[in-house]
Amino acid sequence: MSEIVLAVDLGGTNIRMAAVSADGTIHVSARGKTPPDVSPAQLIDLTGELVNECVGKGLSMAEVTAFAYAAPAPAAKANDGVLTRLPNLPTLDGMPLSDLLFERFSLPVILENDATAAAIGEAWLGASRTVENSLMVTLGTGVGGGLILNREPYRGIDGTAGEIGHICVEPAGHPCGCGSRGCVEQYASATAVVRMANEAGIRVDSARELHEKAVDGDEAAAAVFHRMGSYLGIMLAGLINTINPEMIVLGGGLSAGWDAFLGAVHDEIRNRSFKAPAERVRLARAELGDDAGIIGAARTAFLIHRHKH
Ligand SMILES: [Zn+2]
Image (cartoon, rainbow, N blue to C red; front, side, top):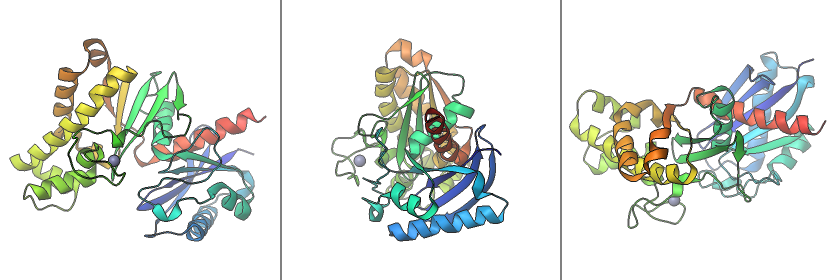
């Protein structure tokens, strides 16, 4: 009998589940919408519905050894499985996720930060699989980050390592949900790009729409991406000096438009970082797409499980 981990990627908009085996193969999967203001009880019920969908597609629960939950919350090394500090899912703050899932399914639960999970997935089977030190940057609704140092995820003592989205790049800039101002998330996320476009009088509803305009030669749209890339580059220039990574992997929905902002990122890195780490670092597109977090969270569960034998 093969071992299966049921991995879940919980986001502010969508929730996805996949049955993953120890080699990273996804067998069956299911997806749903995260309800606005989701309650802990609703999340457990929703998880149950996704489990039933996977079973309906052929999953045998007898093969499942653990849940692996990737969530937009810090996951400390102690890993008590309690969700805390979720700016995009505040109604789940304080939820004892692992205990509640265990009560319902009698399976051990591993909680992993979503961006760290994506970094682990890419370092295992994706873009950064050949390097020892990498930084994963997710450009989506927010800006997230995950660190792999000497092939190991680095979570920090409180699980907040890699929270790069709230590095300040504009001291008196746009207010941020974290309580600060001018965080890079307010300039380099998909949400921010749409806001900056609207501020510039460009009527678009999504970053993809703005990217299409830029590709079609709209100079104002291109300028928004240039501005976004500059702020991202300012942040990365500091991290390149600090971490000296071999690779920076760019993922998340907005990374699809990287041709529109990569030049500005490179300019800032060239102008601001030390020469050696700036010449060393490679910027790469993520390869696992939406599956990176699922695969990375499953990887964490398999490694912890193995250590227990
Ligand atoms: Zn912030």
